[in-house]
Image (cartoon, rainbow, N blue to C red; front, side, top):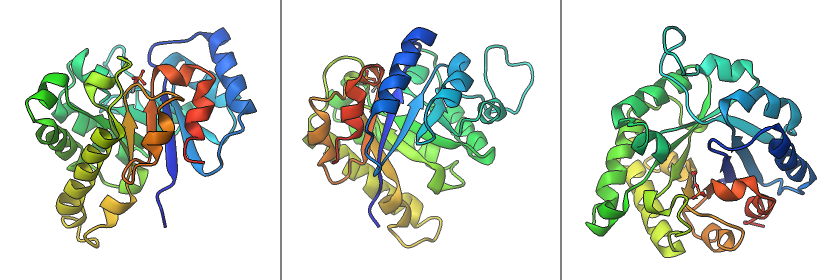
Amino acid sequence: MGRKFFVGGNWKMNGDKESIDKIIDFLKAGPLDPNCDVVVGVPAPYLMYCRERLPENVGVAAQNCHKAAKGAFTGEIAAAMIKDCGCKWVILGHSERRNVFGETDELIGEKVAFALENGLHIIPCIGEKLEEREAGKTEEVCFKQLKAIADKVSDWSRVVLAYEPVWAIGTGKTATPEQAQETHAALRKWLSENVSRKIKRSETEVAENLRILYGGSVTAANCKELAKCADIDGSLVGGASLKPEFVEIINASQ
Ligand code: PEP
């Protein structure tokens, strides 16, 4: 069985009810490729608003959640709260969480473990900075971030990994399909060698089944070329997920 195409939207800290209603309208109008899983990452105050209005075939994700069930963690949200809002997904370790809010590999690993233990589906994100790519360290950095996540995964069927080179996020500078494919293939090889074997599955089981999304300035103009790459199973989309062209990105593999 092939991996089902997957497109995530990351609205970041954007939107109000008026603009969200417009996004909901174009997602309802679609038409959306039934062979693509779609999930939108919405700001926490709008989780319930979006879940109640979006069609069932569009999943809703929080953009972060804490590593504890509840308590004195002002400003954080809990896995149980996301589920209580009717949502099943959470994005974890986005580069803005890492680089603006200082989240470490260790903390992201703890969040991964906790979110999975509490029944959520997760979209953990990894990716190198420009200086790391230029220093030839792309794989080293991505493997380190991936290991911190993989060590904490209890159920790979609820994980969709996003590779998002930091230099491509929100910059309009997309990785070429060749650059993205090269890293995706390397990540899949790492998973085959380090995860599938470790959990004593067939050597390729996790590696072959895990969907790996590319993220970084994906638009309607470049999504189709990226979608053709063998190890790219969809995209995680920031800016363009707020616009009607998001429907074209969802339908990129048609
Ligand atoms: C993102 O926020 O994950 C992202 C990839 O943003 P953009 O598509 O705007 O580069």
